[in-house]
Image (tube, rainbow, N blue to C red):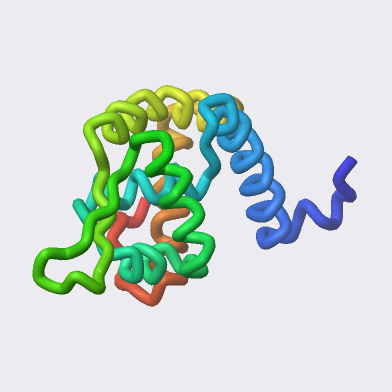
Amino acid sequence: MTPPSVLGLNAYLMYALGKAARRRLQDRLTARGLRLWHLTVLVLLSDLGPQMKTVLAARLDMNASDLVRSVNDLVKTGYVECDRDPEDRRRIMVRLTPEGGSALAELGADIASADDEVLAPLDAEERLLLSSLLRRVHTHLEGGTRTAARP
């Protein structure tokens, strides 16, 4: 049982809830032979299109060797392909395959299920408010401007 005094610490609550949410999502990803980094790479490629490995690592704030390992895993599944950039053969471009796009679409239900499990005590309006607040804090921590409207 969590000590009552710890429940007054927002940093602890965010850590504990994040850990619980991550565990639930990871369980669903593991059932599909994936890890959280795989999902993150797939989502980024879906959102931004083909990317150089170095750019992917920087955007994800990921160690280059960890990124290479994750990309290699995704190549083996057929979810991404790597090709040399025709303009600069030293650069390796990573792109989402149609199979990767389909897998990502299927993962949407798994992600929603994990969210629903964690956020079960909240109604729809509370979930929207929480999402807005989390995005606002996230944007602040990234050094950007506030993009979410104030509730």
